[in-house]
Length: 310
Length: 181
Image 1: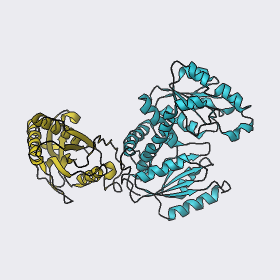
Image 2: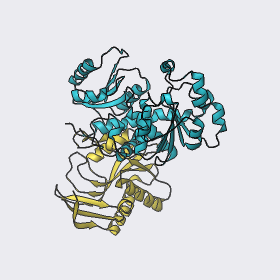
Image 3: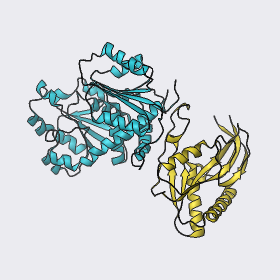
């Protein structure tokens, strides 16, 4: 079931090359137009069934995939559980097999365990799309971020992108680093050492501990959400400390002569990684990311399911 | 698969005369260009629609709006093709309700693209009427569809290929017939 990119699944950015990324971004542009019509629906995937298998809480990604599938006229089933006791190995296999026995064409999966989407492809014969697996990857998020940067700034090659925050735990950061590297953008990671992965140098990005250095350099400032549940894991002393050093405070923002494009995958912690006033100022970009998410996911679903079966 | 040309059926002058003739036919049939709009089917239909529009404007004055239609999402062969085609952008920036809409395409063959174009168009509103203009009709229809304006009827065998080139996309205006090999 190969799409235009020849892929049956979308598991990670690593499996795409530069040309395939651009193809998806180009077709996302056409799909964005559909969302602006009076009748926001095209029959492209009529008769296809897509299951949203969300084993970890998620609002925007799940809704975004659901809207995307519905605008393409596919049938959508939602299987959501925040029950983390659902053991990953055997029961994911059983769940997957059950779902596929219903005659499903694609499974969109979000889960806490890295690599679970990959495992699922070995058990089921339908398409699998990774909607975020543990600390591994979140490929559609990276694609929608690239889409937003490209539409706002006109191109990606040579773009300077600073990613700020908890890089180590962030699948969003990981997918973005891969994707930006492939399209020829420069990446700088801004975080205290304790929030950087081991062997970060091998990821092909510059690393700095100074947000001000990054602000003077970057065209895009990508702020990651500080995951509150990790604050107590002694990765950093306190939220206040983090905000002072790595937060986009009003003072920092006002001082900038050349303002970068500020992006955030949401949901924002106002007053932590971004000051509330700044958040209001850059809100249009961040809500733009959400609309881009629908277009990009339509492009991915169409690409994965648009070819012939078998 | 490369296209091997056997004969040139239309040259640049022929095409230019056809555009002029169809423009007059459209005006005659619709009694002027009042509430008429043209919608080209991507890619070459769009350029033909633009040429028709500017010719009609030359003859009649006024402004004729031109929309662009990408029918990829409406095709009936998505499930059987090898790969999902690259899709272009649909752009209809005007209201088509109660308008006389003329769909413009390059080559009319099975009629399936026209069917998809009509479905796509209906998602934008309810035109008063929909007509079809094509540069070449090569026969072999698989659906009950007929063009209102035809540049040239070109009887072909099913395995033959008709190739239309336009200055805007290919650097030259011509229609060739040949085989794929």
